[in-house]
Image: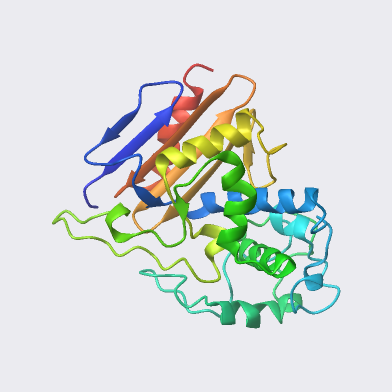
Length: 277
């Protein structure tokens, strides 16, 4: 375990950032990226560019009649497994080999990859969100990052979100000796499932705007629920984030930590959000 840096932003307690964590630096947000992908889907559906019940084969070169729709991808009920099968995964950089070409080959055999019938039980799937992001870019002939900025971030007035952060603004975990841990490669096909970087402050703004102010309508199906709490987390190598809100009380919190277990990040945020319940 390296040097733990943490940043807590909320309306429940004073802002607390320790050991050099900067709420305006850019950090990997992992699966919180899915919130932006799901919100993008709902925005494109509202304007009529796509339909939530479009079959994936309408937009991608997938086998016909898979039973996989955009809605099921967003709800994690597509039946697809958590990780892309047949792609080499290393602990040090698990998604580096999941290129756009690897995704194309995967999509071509989607009908053989489901682990349960589409539309039934949930199976949290990074693969599913990679496929969803690819479908949305195909439907619009527009790169994923541009879509997110145009349809989600610009309407919210948020700037500090990117797939390719400049080196001088990146904040990454370090070992006890102070050596930087190389972050995972997440800017390939996995990008819509977990590859964006953002400032902790940007994550806080997005959380408030989407869950409390409902600036872009009802929350996207990407959000997870626990009683009255709506939340999502994300973790990459040495970095983890938890963002959530209780809409009927207005409570919200975002915790980002470097060099710590994702479980600790989740527990820190949950304790903050529920301590007055």
